[in-house]
Image (tube, rainbow, N blue to C red; front, side, top):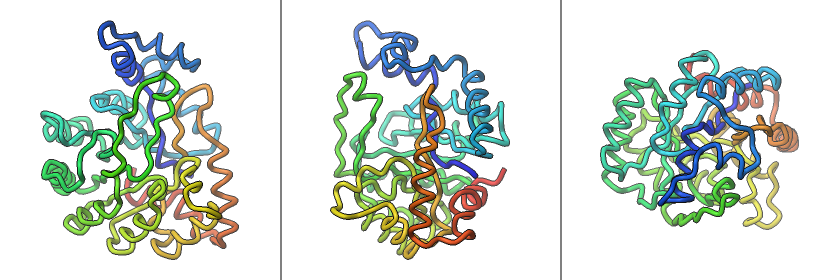
Length: 297
């Protein structure tokens, strides 16, 4: 089994939140973690080792680690370098920030990360912005690089718990805008997490029109509450019908310790796949083969 969606909550990640929590006098990473009641992450190596031990315990062979704030690429790069056979590095990039293109090139070419993560609703930009195209162009020039685009509803639990504002604009997270980019860059795999997070129809439409669009199955998928009577089995059934098992990537959206890897998410998806009539071959692709094909070790 592989997990295509784990957040690497490093010390730098918490320090970034501390600076946002107290702009005039930044709160330390340790104080932020204490306020959350979570385990301290320790060094990059400590956290990477803890994730390896956790994944070993859970029977997970490989995982995507996401640098979850812009500027935290080094943390994930250290984890990948320490355990190259276990981790694939993803990193968040704001294409509208000064020097974004150079940062993206550095992360891919020097740090050897493999997926650019775009959060247009969080950073309030349109996917048809020319600066987004520039970033995707960079990915297209580096075979094996994917682009992850968060679409639909966006809620960051750690920000809520810390009382930080989340001035997101979900109008910018439409999977139909991913379709235009995917059509222009057919050699780039595009990953839409959480089945489009409330925009299932649009995500399926994008996947149907572009064979390089993948859907990640991660999180509790609470967005189903927006669709009366929709079940996770229904979601999988439609996704299998439109995108096929070869374009679904299992993920949990795990993030912090002491919780660690979220077994409940995995169990719920296995039950849903059974209810959707998925066979062993489909489960094998979703839970392992597709990730290995996109990100060969």
